[in-house]
View 1 (spheres, rainbow, N blue to C red):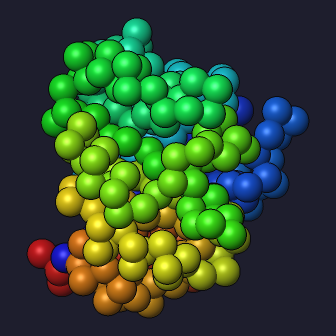
View 2 (view 1 turned 90 degrees about the vertical axis):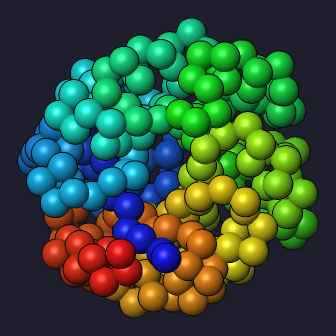
View 3 (view 1 turned 90 degrees about the horizontal axis):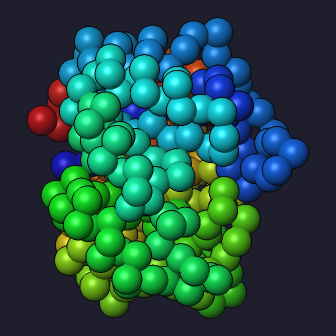
Length: 253
């Protein structure tokens, strides 16, 4: 059954909601900058029993905030952002239930099975989430790395999802082209994920209302979970409230 999954996005040391496709070395287009720190949101999610959420560090200067969130909700949040074989264990030891990895797995735009094996030795498959966040092209969806600015040669399709599922516990997939725009989810991508992914998968990008949870449930036959960011009231949004998302999860349990 489709569940709402919470998030904490960190940029320049603050909890923010940004337009994903705008992220670069100079900054990003910001939808929201919170007056609260990451620990506040972690405690909020813990209080309401929201599981499977993620803390994503977008660029440098976010480690202290990320660690405080992980410590505030032990084994309740996944962590992603600069994860590689040499530091994965530190985030797990700090309290992350899983680590999320993308860019480390690519060398010169090509997927590295050697690097995947290295990080699996540190995490095991049961505590590893593969971030297959992608951009849409004329030929389909391709994984995007380096803050979603570099489109790799690895396509998000049935065969690759089935193969990669053997090496992780879950997938996290941001549709970078619609991330933060509140203009609607990528329905075609959600449908593909629901049909093809053999493991749990969380989709993020474009959600703007409670109705999107129902739509993701319909499109994926309940196989895909949804993260809602910029539209959520706790991030300054007006499309849906956290209380509504909590009630949705309870109704689907």
